[in-house]
Image (tube, rainbow, N blue to C red):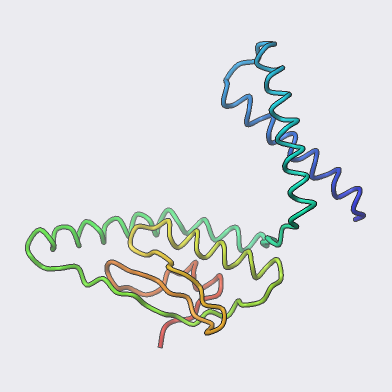
Length: 166
């Protein structure tokens, strides 16, 4: 796809997204609000296209990477149960065995897919209340996590590039 077509597609997608977002936020189709909305969309579109031109986006996830989100509801429910157990134990005087863990991380390239996998791993893993990604050390090829109650790495984190700790 040529650069001109790609920019046209980006502009159309962004315009449609910004317009729908505006209408959803104001929940009205009155003429005055649509005029203000058109101005807001135009400014947002101009800024977004300027930034896309100046700072190219290296975020190129695959559908499989994005679909790892389907594991989140189950992980959140399971981790909420773990947190309730940790809270109960804490109320009984037993401290939570929270730990920092390092695990191997194989996705260290600079390609758009590698960047997307790192971003999605941090975002998806940190949604669940038991596990938070502190960072990914690309030089040492490790992901650093904090878990309130030690457990194996989440499956979605493993599928996005983490290996089981040794």
